[in-house]
Length: 368
Image 1 (tube, rainbow, N blue to C red):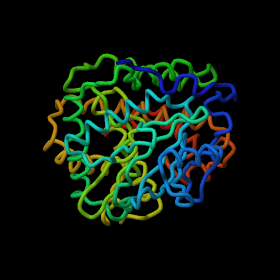
Image 2 (tube, helix red, strand yellow):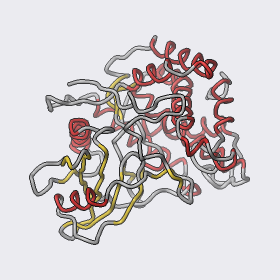
Image 3 (cartoon, one colour):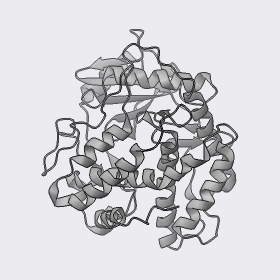
Image 4 (cartoon, rainbow, N blue to C red):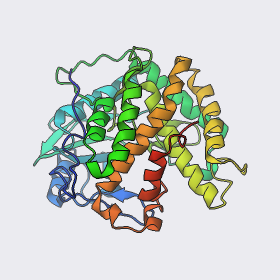
């Protein structure tokens, strides 16, 4: 087993973009979500052929570093994902699939990986990696549909996943997933001098986190991106999507990703006077909502996994780490930096780059 970088070389400063991003700068869709530029149609078609997806059935589902399509295979709905090998190697994708298989075996309702006509789960096509999984039933939960009961179900799901990660032992000899703390250390330490104040804040966070334990009850392979857009609901079950960002990290880092996204989304709705979104009509400022969310979420989580109480003390620094990581991605994105403040704030994380920088420099912003 090895731990590798998922971001190393991905971003370079002073206006340059690495090979992994060349030709893949984000364009913004109507709702403000980033989408990738095209991967050659011939590669998509070959991937569909190898996985026996019916010609003409592919429909784009979006993606960022990958292209994702819905399709039909043998009368069954499936999802095809094609990723540049410079971003995700065959070994990394196979490792992700092994982790998801362990989750499924333990009762997590994640998607089943399917084999190609060649009998493999991952195909390499012209410097791209392709894989197919069964399409899960369900839909995204709308902001006004979220309730404390659903927050609790979300917690139950993540708690189950964390309990299972404690029993996960990779079988693949080439198993490899990133260590997110080391990724962030490298990114934050390489911030250029013109952003030295941001670099200082980032390294302070890294150093404080370095002092925290990494025992089996607190550290392991996590989903890494289980926000509200990576969950689907069929009126009975919440199901997780997209384990592409699975990495080694503190378990509470998974919770920080969720809190970061729901607090930003609820705050955006609150600022627009939409008090039905996320809070069912109650007026809550961001910090109050975060506490409200965590109370319901953790009541479900603790039914499935025992997280040492002191681990939640890490939450503010993990939120700062997440916020700063997203900021670095945005300032390295030429398309985002060409937008007005209003355009930047129209979609996640629902704030301008300038506002995000100010929040990074405000030590109290992510206190919960």
